[in-house]
Length: 596
Ligand code: FEO
Image (cartoon, rainbow, N blue to C red; front, side, top):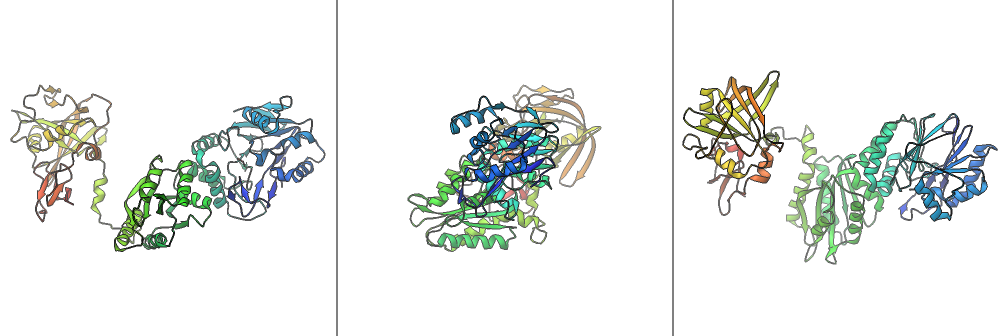
């Protein structure tokens, strides 16, 4: 096979192998690729597995057409590529090995010699000229062993990529690249995403026309597709939308729950549902699916106060490969003391950025009505985004979307001529920058609205994340009409004469009202900036941060009614009037939720 005018393929196909690396099923065999560059000097790229010594040496001799090889370039020392180094060096006594320092140490370990008198040690950025062709060496540690180098021929723009971009399968079998390349990647290189990312960064600086890996086909068209997949895989991204369900089942009850879930997911528009029986399917296929999709459901039985062995093995495969960035749902089964969900969750504890679903399906032997409801709820959670993306199924009037607008929290200070006042708002935004204009919305029921409308000035104090709940109680939950919010405090004043907070803010700005817009319940003040100071580089307190970290849990124990999501005020009663306004924070009925 000719790769370019000067580069020939001299590798071999292996249809004898049963398990690659002693564990991976390879129904279509394996290819061990080797190449020759024919120039003023000749270089052979890597050897092949030990079972193919003679076939490979014949291939090399045939391509050389009577010439002698000058160099053997060893990019990787795993025996599927290095097993014939000694035979080659014995056959060609004038040849010199080019490789990394670590590879020569490994040669000593494998073969008892590091070829110290017949070698060139290369590292990152080193080059060797063959005449017309210049070989540039790129180190690629842990893709897939620490000694790996790759070789870039800058003349023909060929990247010899060692194990990267390889796949299972011999070259004389036609099959889709991605399926067996993905299984190969996650099986063999999957743990080393960060190292592959580093390699892709280096490769990004090279003009590449052809990729020559050590396994699988030579890639010369549509390289962006292959490089894009490697980028997704090595960054643990979502390659395909859908849900993979990995399960074990002893007597069929867990399987029944899995089948019910799969049907529900499909019915709710999940673009792909991949169901894997871990006891019966190829484990490497199950592992590649787990990394391929963004969502996974693990379903298994409690077994010996633990989990079923195939699930344990599966989760171990995931965690040792740095499983992360996924949504995870759990189904457990147990006839007297179900522990499977807890065990699976604790096994995944070290994985980064996993989001567990709120619903866990807990089966006590066989699926009952409660389980059916749990399966429905789990399917709803897993398909929420797919339902919303689809114009047919989406709820197009879901105003909870508005809760996802990000807000900061601010204390707006003003003065009515006799006393200082302050209130908390989340409605401050910069609306233009030439000139700078800040919009501040204030509920007309707040005394500050009345004061600012009359005086035309205010200070906006940007609360920082260290602000305690007492700040919100002080400025948010009482009115300046009947409370002096600064009473007894020594106050600091800006040039406009208004107070600014001495602590718990990262900055403040003094504003002058330029325009007023009446918004029925609220008034919007469009303001210019007359002064602005920065006190610290702490982060601004957002509404979400306040909800999650500052606001105490409301005291709803034993009460029936509705609770304000903003301040925790409890309204007791069967129905909340539509026009109800929270007496503490002045938020409307939409910000209340029923007490559970
Ligand atoms: Fe193809 Fe890491 O050996």
